[in-house]
Length: 122
Length: 360
Image (tube, rainbow over all chains, first blue to last red):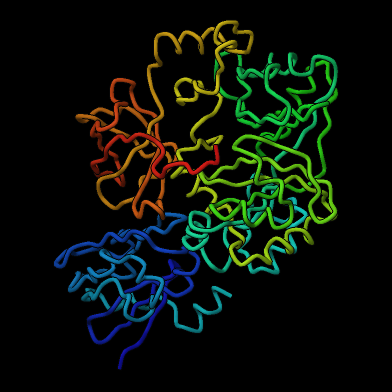
């Protein structure tokens, strides 16, 4: 049973056991505007919580992707690099950025539930 | 945001679903629901309408007003024909640029349009002259794109006779307006100065045309960047000279010979000997946009800075402008852009990125 967490950096993390899928929220995609550039880390790269793990640039601004927890990149969605506009199409579905392994599940405790995130952006 | 000024079209922007941002103290639409890319394409392919009422509109009157105005700018104004507009800039004693502007010979007066952010400074500069300075409380809209002529001619057929940088008074839906064939997108088009109390009604009537859609400041910036047009505060400012900014074309022969404008010593010297740095177009070889303040390197040494940059929707890739050492300004020169600490290769190109489409 997967649980989805949210961050103040407007990312979502769908956790299934000790792995997770990571992306930016629909709200983040709307605020950014049309995405024109995506830069991703490589499979096998490890990172600590709050590390910068990617770049998302829209027609309006550049923004960074931050690691919500510590872990390792298991898979990177290279399709976004080739077609950055996909980010706007389905940010909370097919346009995920990474599949990661989670090094320390206790770091999930600091993340938000969907209800808490909705309250944040309203 | 709460004390941002509102243009006469503010309520219309909201009704059209615009996302509003603060710009130079004004609440302005950055984009409408269509989005920047679609608004940009609309302007290149058909026609887009921009609210530019935040810009300062000023009338100058008095004896020898053109000659007096020439003491502030390096353009020839006394010889500017009636109904003609010209791009120029206020310069400082060091030869830097205080603001860029359009001046029009409106017959019995000069009509000047200045940047919103520099309005107060510019009015103070103008009031230093022995002339009458009157700031107009009028709206200003721009209709830009290949279909602009058709859109406006539907209401004012005579505009078809105007060519680039010509201006006339006309009647638009019963309102007295000034129509100038110019703009800030690289496309054919018009700027229309119109009475505040008719602005919404006239704009709505114009937008009835199938080929015209509203566009925000976001598209205005990507359009002007692809057209290689300078943005005051980014590409030009009090530390950059017109010659460094490659604006020497805007200094007519008589003014080059006679001088008589602030900073003429430096500007005329740079015209003769060349500047030490030049504003150039820069095309990143990769896909990462290089934005303002990105450093430009050559063989490991920093030789310049990006002043404007982003994604060019028509170019379908990143585009930038920036200052580089003069010996590295030749089109084809390869450079490195220091983006997030990594050197990204780029090439100097001849501006504009997208050819101008003016009606000459």
